[in-house]
Amino acid sequence: MAKTASLKVQQWGNSLAVRIPVSVARAARFTLGQPVELSVGQAGVLVKAIGKPKLSLAQKLAAFDPARHGGEAMVATRRGNEVF
Image 1 (spheres, rainbow, N blue to C red):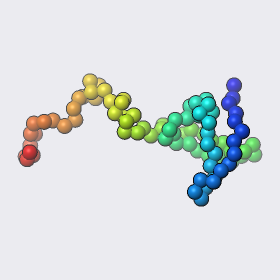
Image 2 (spheres, rainbow, N blue to C red):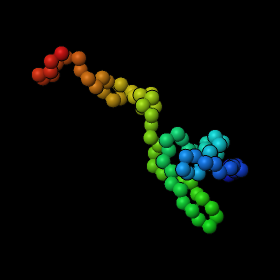
Image 3 (cartoon, rainbow, N blue to C red):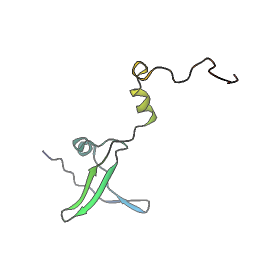
Image 4 (cartoon, helix red, strand yellow):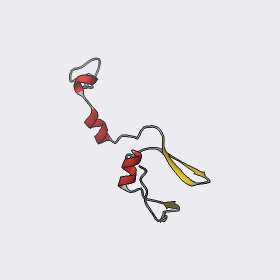
């Protein structure tokens, strides 16, 4: 079943904005940082998810698995002419 919400267009800087309620965002599977595409048709405005959302540093670190990704990226011993 499609989620719907009655919203009000508001001013956001020099643009107009509509906030997407969490219930609609979840139903559309939108996430924070999700790239979207806007298009205008006869029925109105369509907001469509495109691509994958950009992850924050915290999300990237939470997904990091040292066993899978080879552990520590920087070694503690010298490999060349480094000066410590």
